[in-house]
Image 1 (tube, rainbow, N blue to C red):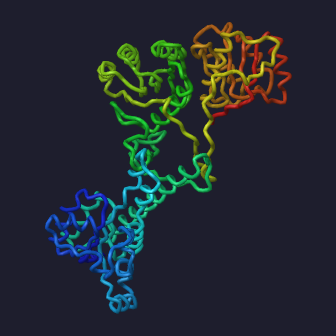
Image 2 (cartoon, one colour; image 1 turned 180 degrees about the vertical axis):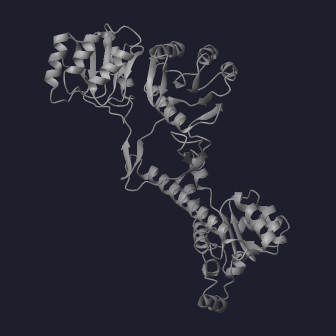
Length: 517
């Protein structure tokens, strides 16, 4: 390999000591001189390795409780000077700067530190690494001559190259430089994110958005098999954030998108609730005052055909009896705050079923983002709808009775989670029919009516946005709907109200639209 550069001198300064000693021992056996700092030097020396302290190189002591150790021209000069530049070579010789060919650094554990609930401001600040990122960036910039390692995962390919070739090839140095810049970028983003949370906790749309995520898993494919996809999460999280995967096949892109939609829906309810989601739309939602099994049965009854291969979320612990009912169906994912041991024994018979432990009521996303050709769109999340009907405006002569009001509260919360134009018909315990994603609101009404799995005589209808014409109300009334909840706000509201009065419908305006795209 013509682009291999010899490795004669390495500087090691790491917080994560995993694999350090055997790696350094192999470097030493390959004739590499070891230079190190503080705790890293002690570990290497205790292992019987010959180590040169950084202060012996800089002729300047570590000071200020270790805040200044490697911030010195003898270190940064050794990392940065251009070996191919004769003037740089002459300057290095004149100043006594010795090249550093390999830099091994991982940074203070800032993210782990601030994860602790009892972490103080002072502790967080002391875990902001300064010298480490400076060296990493310097070495990565000069990767033509310097190899930089920021993860123990890269020890093996580097030391193997040194043992076999006496140094590292340019392709490896370039890849490691890329990883180094990703490492420092993520590190700085994590610091900025934490500081913003402390100083601007209510600022949901900051002037800049630090993203401290990294690729957690490569998904099988995206929405379609010809598309690639991956899941990015916070650097210290497990496979997926806020949840535990208890069994089943690996989660797909579509599984995760639908799981997000299902959990977001059942979050709306304090009482037991269940939802079945397909392609991010709820094909069935049920609630019950006491029983999560009854809520599931209601959700399933809403559209048992579409429930095939669906994503199910419930907001109560799954016990054996409910698990047996779930196991009767072909489902892709079941998510709940918990599963009893007996329930898991039942669900374990469905080997491919993904079982996710996740408490919907413990989750909240202050913002939602979407990538576009024009940039990243960020908006505050559509908040959970309050169960109270105090702010509603009854606009018709007929007034909703107690049962209709309860149905309005239920269906209004469900409708918010259906793709626009959205219409949901049902009663106070379950949805009967869902009209999702229609370009015309009257078409959404007709679809919800056609999909209904129960007689609509006396049913209640929820609409995510206003009725632009009376035709939607006329279609609903013909089907048997007796009460309507919608935001209002159309230029033809008076015409729509008149239609409702003609049909004897009770109708309320909430004043809040819930488009979902």
